[in-house]
Amino acid sequence: MFPEGFKWGAASSAYQIEGAARTDGRGESVWDAFCQVPGKVHRGSNGDVACDHYHRMYEDVQMMKWMGLKAYRFSTSWSRVLPSGTGTINEKGLSFYDVLVDALLEAGIEPWLTLYHWDMPLDLQNRGGWMNPESPKWFADYAAIMTERLSDRVKHWITINEPQIFIGLGHREGTHAPGLKLPTRDWLLAGHHALMAHGATVQAIRAKAKRPLQVGWAPCARVDLPASMSPADIEAARQRFASVTSTDCWNNTWWADPVMLGHYPADGLAHFGADVPAFKSSDFDLIKQPIDFYGVNIYSGERYAADALGRPVHVPWPDGHPVTTFRWPVVPESLYWGPKFLHDRYKLPIVITENGLSNADWVAADGTVPDPQRIDFKAKYLGCLLQAARDGVAVQGYFHWSIFDNFEWAEGYEKRFGLIFVDYRTGQRIPKASAHWYRDVIAAKGKNIIPAAQLTHGPIGLKSGAASTKELV
Image 1 (cartoon, helix red, strand yellow):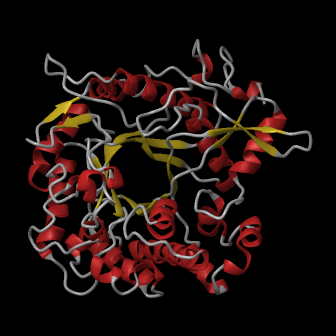
Image 2 (image 1 turned 180 degrees about the vertical axis):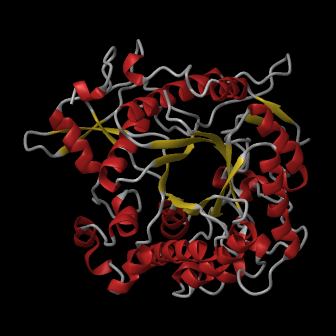
Image 3 (image 1 turned 90 degrees about the horizontal axis):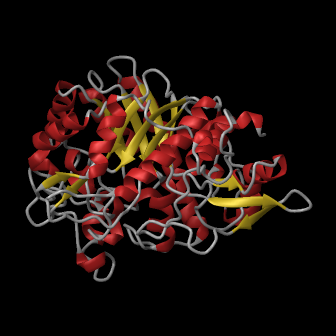
């Protein structure tokens, strides 16, 4: 079974659900500005209203309580608390999170607070954003305010969410806010500052904490997994998982090694070469702060096999392999190998801070929202996570992405990830079939989840009928 105290949760982010973009003194963020650029967001949508969570928070918390959530991961809006990013605190904005935390605790739900989910205040972006060497201090000062206000009640803190995406899509590819297409040296510098901001924020949280708390972060993982259970393929996948081989942000170690080990990986330094930004050794003294858990967002993965020399070779998924409406391959075993490889490398407890799928959901004639694909997806992925726990990975929690259908960044409102259906015209919430299923899973503490190795049709890479993958390695 899942370990005692396992956190059964769901997640959201401020810009994607709150709305109230110009209410009670909130300042603009980079996403407010990006959504105004023609052609950048599907159908020209924006987060001005989104799920209107700002005004419907009590109703939403009651739905979480009905579902039996033990934990709720949310982000705070930097520009709602500090409209200019620094300086004067907006008390009305800060008070919203005060009330939210109290409502969650009253409902028996543990708040997990993320400080940055991609919504840099626009005034700070106009001063260079993550390119500005002052950005770590800006972020740490914001973190200190939040910690001073909420750490008497919030025990779990997450610094930044998915630097690979807000740097990669936001600063390299230009498809997310702030919409920049920087040369390699510049986006690497922005990423370096974001990592420094993570470290400075861990320091700020611990300095201001009013009680013992836990701090982590939440990068996404590029999960490379073995095409078979042969030792050669497993080692090839592990090598690939820990490699930097392309001039983009889609890797694990360029981001995690500085945080966990105090240096950039050697293959990354060699690959980026002259584009590596100038840094001081003291930068890594700041970046490498002790954290308590490794949060990670995992959705999919790719297979690798060993060639004759043991090098990883990509093994494509066959024609007809299942995909989500985002066209991401459905790969349940990514929730086995991702946590395993991260735990083996960094020796920290693992929390799945996001996992879920976009699906074609709508309200049926009887008023329900059937989503059998999401139930099947979650059952298989959780079965692989359970198998990882059985095989010695210290897994502490699972947060479904997302609690509600919401504003899905450049995709606007086209993609639905939620356990709860949202009618964007009326704001009506309807729990999907998957919400009812997840409610039962939580009530049973996961005892109704079948571990991957026991599935009749087990995921590729995990042999059906085996009590433990240790027998096969």
